[in-house]
Image (tube, rainbow, N blue to C red; front, top):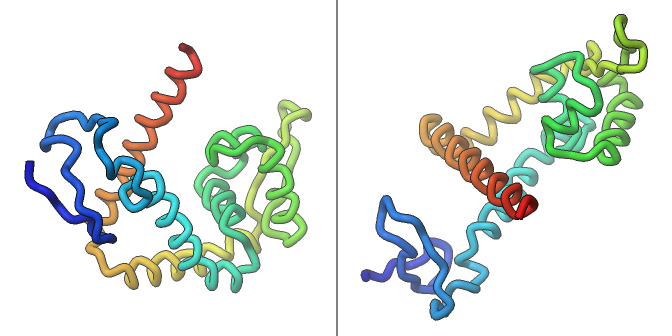
Length: 178
């Protein structure tokens, strides 16, 4: 099998599988445990880099990255409950609740009791919260322009990462049931 250089290191590795076949880990592969060869680390590192690229914009908006994600969800689906928002963001209630409380303290989110079920509380972006959309669009456009990839490439990459996430979720769920 031909060797290929890892794009971010001098470590040389063999491809795990031919195109169109399933990758398998081999105990005899000395590079299997190399940090530079870990997909999980590449995703983790890239996520941190994305957050760092957004940080100056988010600071101008006076919100954190998790708060930005909550606002994105509420702009898309106003009226979600805390539980629904947690499910959308893959966060538990204990994480979502203080996040929303801070957004409420800044005047970006409000909670309103549902008319037909007074126990349920709907979350909505306030006028000030909706006004952040303009800055959020500028942030996304600026960072994506700085990355320099064609939009089609970024969309395909996002779709691949989402598909990978779904497969990993299925693996985790199957292991829970086993």
